[in-house]
Length: 66
Image 1 (cartoon, one colour):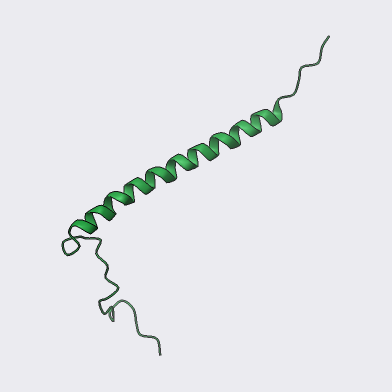
Image 2 (tube, one colour):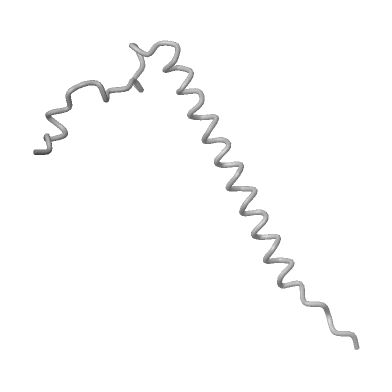
């Protein structure tokens, strides 16, 4: 009777490759999502809800450091 070959490491390698592919796909879709927001900001920066507020004085939310 022949002994069956153990494919444990093949299964582990397959799971790791699948996880890496899924992570890369998710990160790519997140980039596309934020790319749309970046284009909207570039078109109408004054009307955008995503405008840069770092130039405004945030004395109410951020106390000054002395």
